[in-house]
Length: 137
Image 1 (cartoon, rainbow, N blue to C red):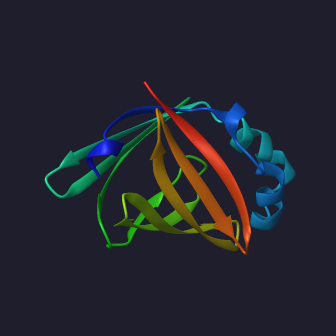
Image 2: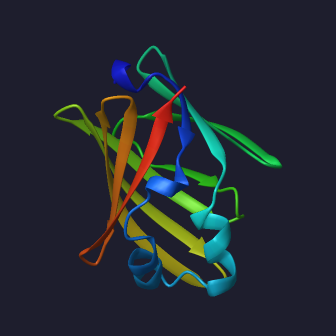
């Protein structure tokens, strides 16, 4: 987990397959620009065996404390109710997510790993994947 520790910036211009993944996630058109152009910074730290994940974006700051393999419920920056579970396998964060908003439930997985100065995240739902990148600051 130590290699994920640090501060990381979302690089929206490096996202691949956003539209197809958004279709699969049934993201409403009016929300897509928000997600597609998200300007955010993530921080990851360790507190013993606890992963401390922070998110900073315009008008929203959040810190979450995860134990590997233990589901955590929280509110996301768009007000959705989230439940996430993070595990570590082969140097990757392997994550399952469930999002509930406006009477709709969406579930997907994320495989997150280090590649050079980037965290690469591959989000997958129903066989459709989107790749995102966070640059180390």
